Image (cartoon, rainbow, N blue to C red):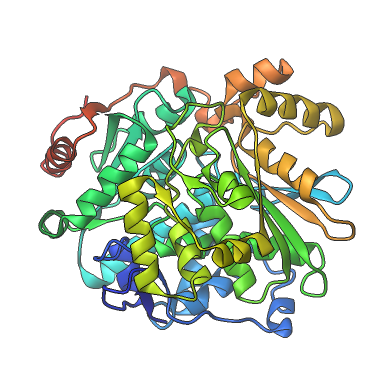
Length: 467
């Protein structure tokens, strides 16, 4: 399998090279040169497999020939061994034809663990083979950072630098990052928004001399391996509900478009997915695009669902590339113009192709709180402020006879204030996090400037303190 950039001016790479490279040198994102396609018998053969083996079989075509199936299976078994639910990604029915797939049973209680735990083992495997080290630099809106830290902490061949927007995550989310004290972990509280953090990370990768000096790599969803490791749970849910003989739809709360892009990828591989529903909060650029072809950046507004407080959705570029018939030149023009002007003029026929598969729903904070209360009263299910937007989108867009699966992306205990306000219930943190608020924190506050981030990365690699 070879990988190409959405902007067409970067070399095609193997899976291992894409894993270590992250962002393409031309600023684009990597996608498979050709998509693997599973037959009906291929899908049927996955039924009943333990989740780690299913994940390895789904990912195997993307990793070949660099990583064998047997190696991938071993890495997936290690990755999911510490998850708290034996099914890893259990399904719960909450309404007629509406199911919730829980993706938060990993060590940091968020869906990012599903891919990040695999990535940690993939990095270790490839870097050991090559006798190399890399510096992971990533931006987080709340959950990616803690998942990346948990996957990479203490690994000899990885240094990890995480940028989070200061004061714009929940306290639980922040402390999950800042209380990890291993010497290979650095946390930076950036005086800005998540979009600022994301832009700063992309600027570091675009600076080729700094990128090579620090041997930078990425673990957020600009890294194709992250998307590949998220495809399996859509397959698992669809098979449990009757695929490939039966169509299934999915509703996904998303800010950076990576999670729902993995569902699109599963469909591209032949999984019978009828419809994909995007759930947004008050930062609703994706829903505005789907409903009115309005891709215009507005100011990021803090919300009850901070992991979705995003206006520039990186993974949308991958979908755009596909909707444009893989016209890399046109994709690059649209993306460059978007970042320059804050608006993207997407051709009507391209928008209509998106509308054939996707729908969008946005809830503001008051609607989110009401939805948490309503779902709990109706079904007894306690959904966090992100997951509940997916559940509400699934409820509104479900079709008769077609199961709708809403992705539950975070444990409600990560957002205690919102849960108490909506339901009066304070969800308990699991035992391994019970003392989270007593642990010492370590992080550095930095301005949202490229030079400040560069200095902080260099200091981290030199062993500088971030207390």
